[in-house]
Image: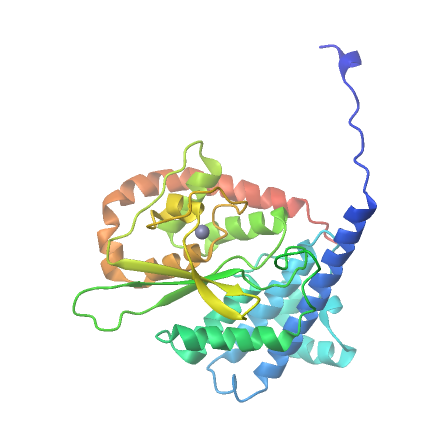
Length: 328
Ligand SMILES: [Zn+2]
C-alpha cells in the first residue's frame, strides 16, 4: 500500500454561520433547560401538582433527564448551568440528590416524555384534550423566545419540547372505555443524544417487541417490523405553533415500516427509527394489555432469538456514544 497517495484529511473550517448556530444552540439548551426546571419547580409547589402521589419522583426524573442532556451536549453544560440562583440550586440539590449525582448516566425518558407521563397521571388517561391543555399550559408558561426568523419551527432552538405526542388503545368489543396509552417523540437534539436515548430505550425501557423492530431497522441490513392486532388504534398529534393547538398527523414512513401503521406518509424523513412518539405509546400498550400480548405471541420465538444479537449491537453502540462524551 502506498502511503504517498494518501492525502491528509483537511480540517473542516468552522464558518461564522456555523459558530453562530452553535452558540444559539448552546444558549438555547441552557435557557430552555433553566426555564423548564423553573416551571417544574413552580408547578411542584402549586395546587396543580400538590397531592400527586410521589410527585418528587417525577421532579427527580425531570432534573436527571435535563442534566444528562446538558452533560452530553456538544458544549457541555453542568447541572449548575440550569439555575437562576444559587439558592434554588442548593435547595434542589438537598432535596434531589440522585439527580445531581447520576446525571452522567442515561435516563429512561427524555424530559417531555416525563412531563407527558405526569400529565396523564394528573388528568387521567381518558381525556386527551385535557392532557394536551395541560402540556400547552406548561409550554406557554416557559415563555420561549419567538421563533427564529425564517425558520418554520424551532429547528435550531433546543426547546426540550417533543415535536409529536401520540396515543394508542386496544378497542376490544365489550370494553366500553379502552385504556389509552401515551408517548412523546424524543425531546433531545443532535445525532449523539438521539442515538444514546434510542439505544438506552431499546435496552432498558421499551417492550422487547418494540425494541426488536427498532433495532432491526437500525442494525440489520433489512429491517423487520412488527404488526398489531386490527383492534389497536394509534393517533399522533403535533403542536401547530400558529394556533398553539395540537393537530392530528399521519404516521411517518418510519412508523409504517416499524409498526405497519395504516396510511403512513411515503416520503423518507430525517428522524432515526425509534424517534417517534408512536414507539413509546405502543410499547406502553404491549406492556399493559394482555389481549394485545396474546395476539402478538406467534412470532415471539423468532423475535427472542434475534433480539439477543441486536441487543449486543445496541449495547456496543451505546457504549461507543457514551465514550465520546468528555467526563470532566
Ligand atoms: Zn413516526
